[in-house]
Length: 183
Image (cartoon, rainbow, N blue to C red; front, top):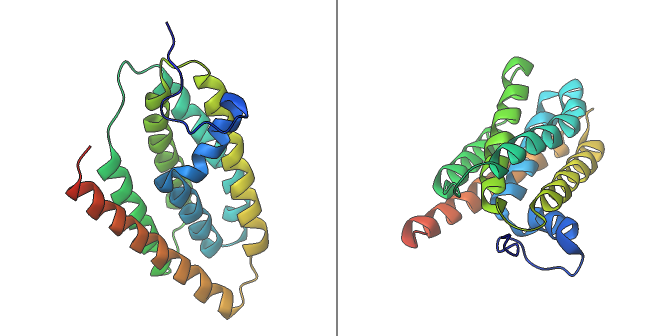
């Protein structure tokens, strides 16, 4: 017996649309994608161009593995702390080399997708929801990467750092909430 999708907000668009909406309704996943895009833009052109392909593939792979897990992974504290650290890297304008940046993006995205896939496991339409969220990640990462692509003007570099500080601040607020109100 399959259950209705308890971890998705019903949009009226079916599991595919619910999965697309999940990215924008799940703050840690959204902040992860935005943070990785900002970090890749700071690193330079070739890395920012590869990220919109890497993120959806890593999300799909991690999500498919998560769908096979017997129980839901509860890693909200860890995921939120990782997003806070990612935002801090952007805010401090740490330019990671490609041998670090791309594997880091793949591992973080796969971990978050593993958690999301485990939450959807056993539900009707779980695969469609996972595919919908994968498409939303591809679209968002592409739409963010294109206008932010170098050459950097100084104001854009400052804006990226401000974005990183907001990601860190939002993640720290979520961490405080999770510690105060454990799941």
